[in-house]
Image 1 (cartoon, rainbow, N blue to C red):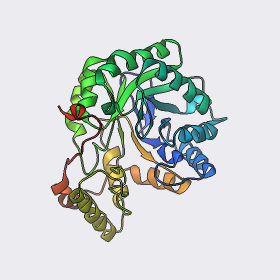
Image 2 (cartoon, rainbow, N blue to C red):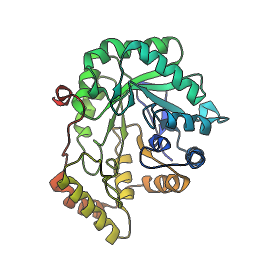
Image 3 (cartoon, rainbow, N blue to C red):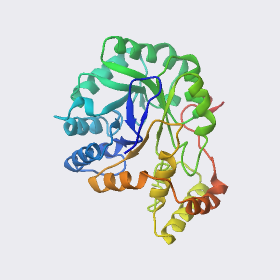
Length: 311
């Protein structure tokens, strides 16, 4: 495993992060015992950073993760969770709810502190409230010793940039914006660096689009994009490999992010992801897949409030 610092903090994390959403049955049912074994396997293989949220499975992911981490040396992992989103349409960025949410997460996760707490999917809220109320509430919890660092997450890069320009942040977490399909995060990374904000990456498989199985029915990408992804998967299959492995190697290899989170529902997937993520991608295969994906490059979709999707 390779490790990078989260710039501006004292945290150093594995380049491959454990995305805990599958523990909340977000992508299909996962038996808790299977999920617990996957967490332990990831730790054993050198994965040292875990990202979760009370939104995933309506607290189920945090509950299962807390069971998995019981008895594990607290210094052996970096633990990140979120506040603000609690259901599909259940958002509350108010200070009182933020404080209560952190206490609830601490209890479910069985820990005395959280290394990173992020405001979840900020594009669904009022960004001024996030800056003036939500983040100051987290800063207060940092002063109280309950959290160590704070950040924001979201899909529209413009929303992340807007908050980063107006608030003191440690991190931004962007998803689906540094993948084989969409590399637009690289254009925004220098701005975040100038602000002293570290960048975390998530969903290197584009929420399942960059897989042999293909995108789930609810995927928001246009049909043309998904057709290109399916064609890319066929190219990889003909070459005796998988689109998942190529996509992971490509995303993890980007030096502009500290870590890339990917879901790992079971031990087999953990081993495959760790094995597949490390090492450079095959340049010939990458070039061929790039040609197939070119018509869909950097195509995005709206998320959250319309005003939060505009530059």
